[in-house]
Length: 307
Ligand code: HMG
Ligand code: MG
Image (cartoon, rainbow, N blue to C red; front, side):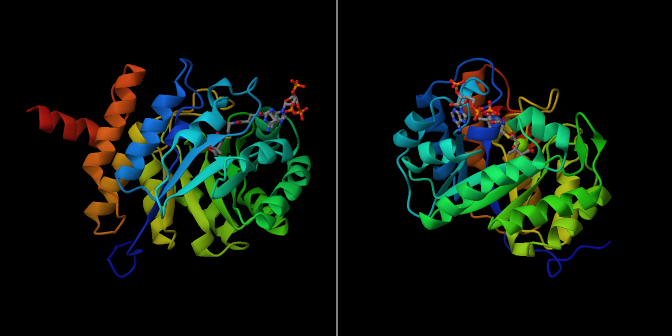
């Protein structure tokens, strides 16, 4: 396959999910003030969509218990959309007080992961999401659906594309406006990801599907290219490669926003985001966490700066 600028999207939109997906799994407490500062730095760098927090049980995910404080503390910028995760009506009612621009219901293509992550079957999850979606749309809040384990599952192994198609159809049926194809444990490779995307595109338009690739096995950029090749132009990534899911043991973070940006910029694809400022934001949060950014690009640039 030979790529040309004519066959690739001219522009890509990135949701930085670092403050939520990135930090949710951190064992050490991260004060709300640090999360707020991270969001501020991301928006200053040009990120137009930021996944800020989740309204889930604090017993299940203690790190996100400060959701109200974080949402209240952000100095919002016009043109930036702030999204949050809401697994049920209780979560939505709490989130609504904080005026998110978009809520995310999150389901899985794997039954076992659905049970471990949100304590219910796929069918039950859709029943729980339906009133959340209706309430959000009635309140003028956009709705995204995250689809976990679309390629592989930590409990069930390989996931067939048909199961992804089935989940996408269920999400569409309850009014979800766009979906994330998530490779939760990063086991996807380009052909598998393209098959899962094909199944999703039976139900959602190419403008309504995003790639959410964890980089556990180093495949996320390859999978991004495979998705770009299919016309996908929405992606999710995490500053400094933060993260992992508490219910997917061993899974590491999303592809680093820095690495994704370097790839896109190198291919002449517009993002409106300043790579150097994202690297600074990544350095800020990594310094707080006491480690180096988990990004090859950030490491290379920081080494160059130091030299
Ligand atoms: P449950 O125990 O089945 O819920 O949990 P329940 O309705 O029986 O309620 C049990 C308790 O939780 C009650 O409190 C409720 O009030 C409380 P208690 O009486 O015991 O004190 N509760 C809540 N509290 C706050 N906010 C809520 C809420 N709902 C109930 N919204 C539930 C069901 C979904 C709540 C639970 O399983 C949960 O919180 N799971 C955490 C899921 C999570 O955050 N996972 C990580 C994010 S997903 C992800 O990372 C993947 C993604 O990045 C894509 C990818 O990469 O794959 C999106
Ligand atoms: Mg994720």
